[in-house]
Image (cartoon, rainbow, N blue to C red; front, side, top):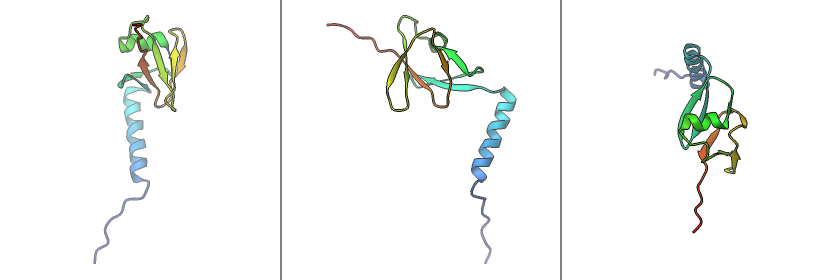
Length: 99
């Protein structure tokens, strides 16, 4: 009877970290965020609300909202500096019509 080869429990995790380090080494470090489910990458760890809106094609007068981990939506002024953390999500501010 031949024993099946078994990968160490952390093989996948270590392999993926190494792969990510290689990719970062080739492209330089980048920070990822999402606006209306579209993914964006920037090289700096901070960005302003205006820069996010410009990248996402959102007019400054429309506005932007940060979606917190708990689902709370917080308005982001165009001059506000945002620290890009893993999983940061934003969306175009909703427009309200009075009727």
